[in-house]
Image (cartoon, rainbow, N blue to C red; front, side, top):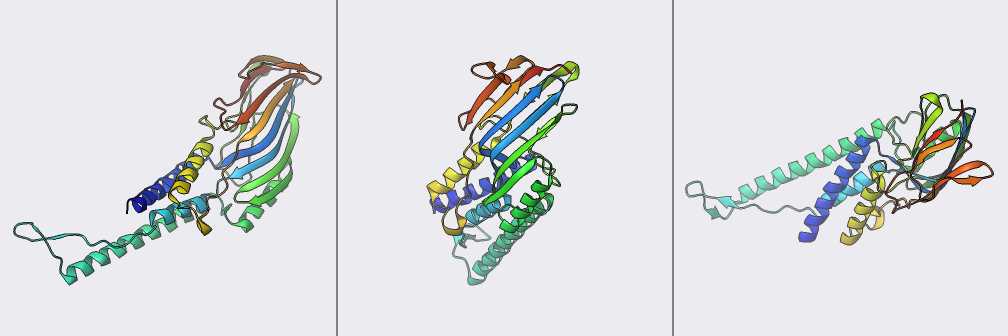
Length: 294
């Protein structure tokens, strides 16, 4: 009985966590990758990302949470009491039947509420559900139409393997990734163009511990919980959890004003290079401040 209660509690927590990520727009996470940003005097830039991108399978995780919450739920007769002395007594057949009707109505209401929540999430994602292979391929086609997405391959369970590269003039801020008709999503890299030729680079997506990527810790925790209590088996198997592992480099012929690498800028044939090794233990998201001549 205690195990069933724990599973139900985990189911409730799972759905709450999914909704929290959804409302915060935290839907994307890198997996294994290499990424590089080139910043050049004269105001040009180039950015590349090769590797895995995970799109949180909202409806699949929510469905798992719902099933866990309702797992092995059964009607339990509640005690009855006398009207005069409020002492516990044996329930009549009619009273037990009424209790069961109320329990069934409550259960049906929760199921309907969960269905509406799932429909709401799908609607706010433009109908895209990465747990549905057909919908995920539609998203892959949408990405291939966008400039810079040279290769997009869907591998299932919300995993996309991509090759992205774009270059141009840095006369505007730059975000990666952005997805057409998909307004609610977090970003991995932000290049903010300041006055006077100063550029600030932040990569909140390239850190498991920072506030920019809560996906990693929350999903890993839920996977561990389901595994410990045996709630994942058969069709309820936990979706793949992103393994954050990669490198992020900034190469520039400008002046490095600040950065949080371990080694600082290193001279290379292409200019000064900053490099971060990213994994599940990375606590601080990469950041740098660079001055380039306009």
